[in-house]
Length: 162
Image: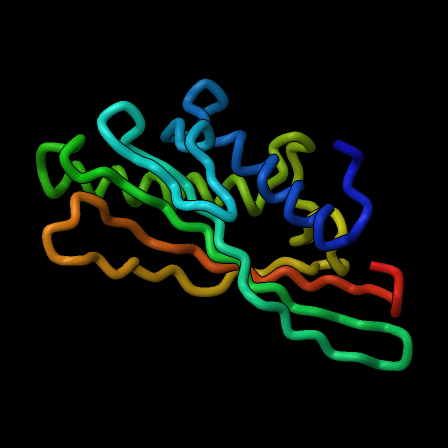
């Protein structure tokens, strides 16, 4: 596979790389970075009770001459397999620990050990901001629960130059 060239792709690859740092061996609360999914459903269970699923929403481009600035909503879902944790406080702790890990991994580039002015590769300067954190809807009888942390990436392009 060739190296990413489009700004949107650069931003998504950078985001995913940051999320893979979520490992206890690297000082995080969980190892959920080893169970990371994008463009498909995350699988959590007895062997991997925590996981991360990344959902990329539709962008909202605004044009000014040849320049296009698009905001891309990205939802990072923290997923927990409930039976792996025997009490409600343990389940809450697992979920909140994973949410904290996601925020830390996304907001501080561990590879660089620095806050990169709230950006990702390929984004506008200060082109990443955090949105809301919301619980995910849980179906009756479901063994899974979770929450989602929303980020908005701002990507600048020129017409015909993604």
